Length: 287
Image (cartoon, rainbow, N blue to C red):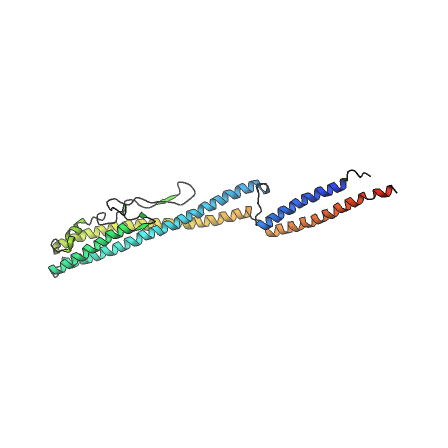
């Protein structure tokens, strides 16, 4: 028997050290809820899980972008809906002015109403914006230019975009209502005659058709956005589920593993104590 080197105790210590490492690793998983806490736990799994997490985060921001874009299209649509109501009223008043049963004084009143209504139509085009971006004309300061197309990022790559229609200029100039404005300018009936009012009805119909076309374009864009949002929400859910399978810990399995390692650790401690006791038998040889 040799006493300088206690091989049995060293084997027991090595086994117990390895068991304690496994025990600590199991505790880390149970406390964090993650199967992968560091790259050494599963290097390839970590790379895949991180890529899935990035993809899910990107889709989450894309969904947020889409919801903001839907809000923008709704603002533009509601504003143009009010402009359409204004044009409906203007047409009704022109029809009233076009009949000879309406007096000159009546046409004067009608001219004042139409002048104010068209002024409000321009106000709507000037004021309608989302986060400072004017939607119905080039800028709030000037209605001389059309609104630019707006592009919404709706995916992970640079090409995943949805854009609005360009060329929207929903004011009296953009809707070609200058003749109507001239006829009612200043709220007088000098230029608004019964025959003149009849001639202006075609201008209002053209403006309504143009406005309805722009509304339809915004509606189509909104439908496209909502479809993209629904699709990406489904993708994000499935991607997160895939990441969870790789990254998250199975508590039932890990609890069982922890209990096993805990028992082995206790047994290892007992084995070390027994290995140390065996060395004491050498003293009997010296008696």
